[in-house]
Length: 466
Ligand code: BG6
Image (cartoon, rainbow, N blue to C red; front, side, top):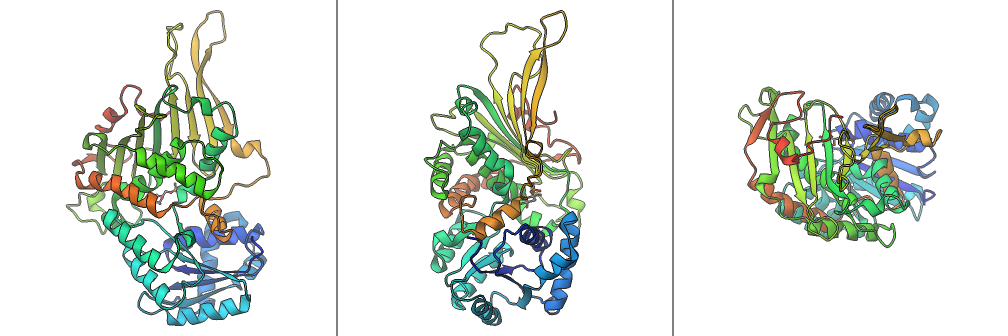
């Protein structure tokens, strides 16, 4: 597939995501020979950085900074020669449409076009209708950044607007957590081994925790946080998607449709979320941040207990927790097993067994268990088996989440993208949480969130910190 000449048009071409992830990601893919030989990029946005040369200079600065050791002057020069900038807006996309047509003509018949919308949620719909009006949408694939709407009504309206211009199979809704290597590793663990899948149910698993604390505060994203909040930013997107992947039934195959169908069934089985299963928090000092309303009640922390009412997971709590300005930065999924039926070892320490997936770029998997302590007495201690996936395959390089997803878009593979139905179902679950949101509780910076969050986890508590 990568042989197909491709034009990549990036809306939000001077934005933060373009800077940190998209251009460094495209450049790395180019260096690894993973983009088509005939590849062009047009950056676009309302304000021009001052022509193509100025744009390339800006990109060079970003890529030097964010592509790290992969930067190479000669390779960059070859890559940058493929990039131009044309200003456009939701009202006026004609100049862009003309440039796109010229680039398509240069790439020749059979060239494909990818449009990537990295624009604020309120601009999405107007941009989509501009894409229809100007003919830019014709035959193109469209990638959409999250957040996808801000509630069920806006997500439905955006889906309707999209379907007026694009077929669903041309739409790639990004949730970059699905691009993390570790997420695909969950599939490999479960379905490429005989050892783990038999554990994957209510008979063996006592709880699941999906924990994404972050040390960073809002890092200049006050406007975004004030209008979005952590629940919309992280829970009804990334954390719910992780839950979908963890909880799904074995699919008939690993095709996009088969996996999505299984994920859809999981979300359909999620019980309405009760207010007692939700804790919202706001870190001390948030209201004093630049650009934040001094009386803001926006949550910078959210923890939710989710129940999946199906045969496999009945009665198993899925505990989701994430927040800014917390004690540590982690992205961890823990499956905790039940205690053995009898306690033969009264001195047994620690939790019985846990399977822990670390979703960081260097994926790790760990099994926590009990072993006999060396020495004369039959005493049991706590130990772990740890696998660093990159060490198991020396010389093989993982793809960063955005790189993986950009590559999948180029290859027209929608497996790791979300569908209209899924997104709407997740808002259906989320709207009542946001409408009936509990009082936002304060928590100190550098902590694990408000005290109330402990009760959610029950007896065995939150599994972080170790
Ligand atoms: C983004 C959120 O989608 O994910 C951010 O908007 C968050 O608030 C980020 O910090 C976390 O992503 P990662 O890949 O660094 O775990």
